[in-house]
Image (cartoon, rainbow, N blue to C red):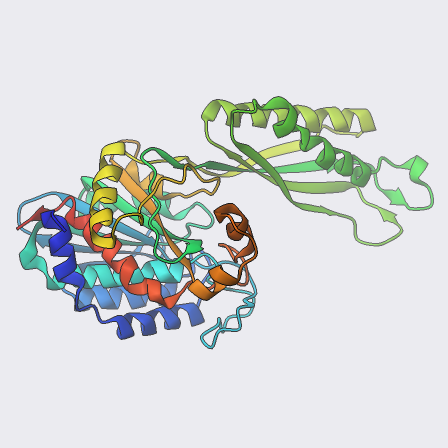
Length: 413
């Protein structure tokens, strides 16, 4: 380790209370909470921050937590972890599996809070090694895309100061011990779209007296699959997924409407706008062809922005991670199709770095079928899977990634 930041990170994390942090992780995993209901999780995080000497506030943006540690003159660095779980029934069989029916930390946010707690405590205990201000943010409602914007709207920066740099990380599938970085676009934009097809309901024995919205919706779902394959250039990355289709109540009733919910993933705004225009055009055309009595309702819902790292900020973090964890642990995998609301904390102006921490247990990775990295990634449980179970061996390294990342920007003594 040659840089001052890397040496300081080693010194501040060499004696991490790993057993205590693992216990915290198990506790958070047992008690998952959905978006904007993260009350217990927020109390846990806030209590640990107060114990470490942070000025701490709760209820920011609903259930958000903010801790501030002023430590002399120097830059202000914000470390963020999301706190919410998902409406997924856990199927891991872990001894510390979720006790909340139908709710699970299937995306690793419990691990994120654990990492943030450990990093905050380590940096507070080692404040003689650095100068500046550390902001620690426990963010609600990442899964619904609401949390970051709500915290900003609730005066996050007016109340606690505007940071110079934002840092965030995410658990990801892959053999534990890797730290993927991308100096630019790392995650895609996500756009939810809802379509209501209006038909004319009636008895199943007399379809000629109806306009069947189920048939129209079925045609629409099929036709939507051509948006990416036939309207987006092969060099562009885009995904269109129909996640839900709902209609009807009984076998012999033709309903009056059908509902379709779809999601778009894009890596440029022009492609996003082209896909939205195609969805509207296809929905209108299919309904017209079916003789629907009304035009379809097409509503754009939750939208996540693209996550685009500041190249300089990401290079600084990647460099210190390479020193701390060794050659070959840091690499550029290219942009992912997943999405985040983390960029909303940047207000379009604050530089940020966001990276991944791979968390698949070694034995799971080794037993996964396939020879190549993509083959194995397709076989192991990923984020949002009911079988997603990060390796506890990643607790300490995930703390070190945040500590070393922060020290790359704070004034190190």
